[in-house]
Image 1 (spheres, rainbow, N blue to C red):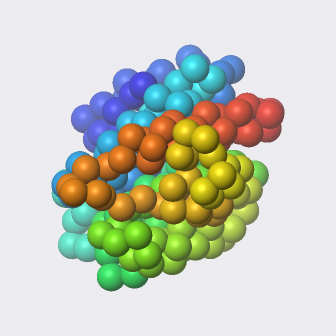
Image 2: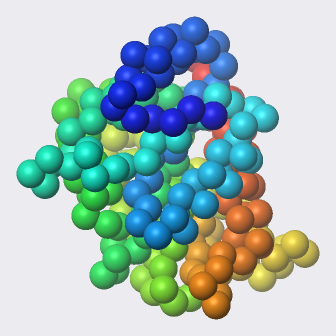
Image 3: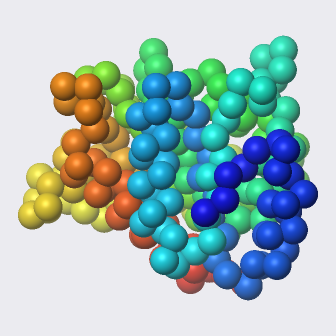
Length: 206
């Protein structure tokens, strides 16, 4: 696992060049209370046995005058075979901080630099039906804009003996807190999503 931060730019880029033969995954996410970060870390755990994973948390220093400005994160995704998008659902969609990152990817979009990468997504909301689907849909459209291929969950909601995909979202992982805590079944689902993303991405490594 690697942490994607501005001060680690050269180290991360050097590592990605040395590890280019292995499947590369980037998890780009925003988290305020730490809930989305716990999901991101679970996705990383699930993928780690198959892929080299870089966690990229969008921080306050990355947003300058409302614009996302962290070229290291964008270059990390350039080098990745698969990408997981994560954000809490705010007012029916992804956070403004995540949207700032998405807007900053427009230069990559114009050149389709991220085409054919595998993408997945995860989000959390206040209520079971807190419009998390709209955030996941936003992620899929962002992926489609870039020519990415989407990787959803292949766990039927309500049918898994271990309780994975508790809210029945096939598009990606949707969660909400119960008594202020993420259920273990949701963390297990996040690990599964990470493993699935890594497996699918590994089949597309050029």
